[in-house]
Length: 293
Image 1 (cartoon, helix red, strand yellow):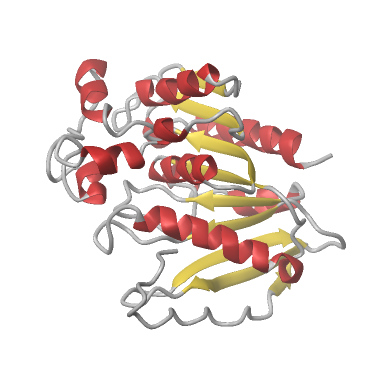
Image 2 (cartoon, rainbow, N blue to C red):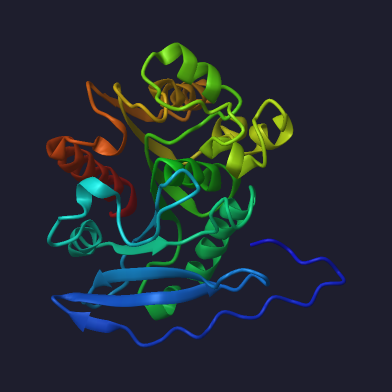
């Protein structure tokens, strides 16, 4: 979370964790307050885990929406009709799943959303005993803008052992060029009213330091967590080249990421329920291989 200046009052402590609901073999905490940043809404997350004895590994999900929209309520439109929900499926597979909200670009500019992801990770670590979460490294999973934030938080902090990044931007300094040369983009990331510009406070060309700081490729290092990058070759919102750039950077430091390019798939797996199902199942298998003995 943002640090206060020496003249500012300390941020209020989040509300105590309320008792969970139980049912269907799951334990669920709704709207848990993980941070209170003065001047903003309280920051909330949901946690669901299996109703069983023993600590379970933690997966933290970061929603997409171009840093402008979206909420912790789901994984995106192609998963809206799932019953059980993707989070319930993950919990049934033996994970605790925390889905988090963060400040959007109409509320605060970068690095606010990254600060919030870090704040959620810190709160979850503090509450591990209450939540029945296994101490130690967790995994981050994000889609689109959430994939960007998941990668960025994992590469700039500690305590994350694996990352699932679906079609997330990785290099904001090249987004406009990649969109222009890819032949598929229906948006201009370099325009002043683009999602990227609204998050940064202006076009990347006018804010080069912020654009580099907000780019996961800038922060790649040899000790990077395991990465599963998945991106459709027909993505109209985030050029496929962005995932390739992050994979190349990770390869360059010996981190050995996994890059899955899905032929013909669009952003959000739009219009392709099977692509969404396969992406989810592959992510669960990847997380199981890195989080469970």
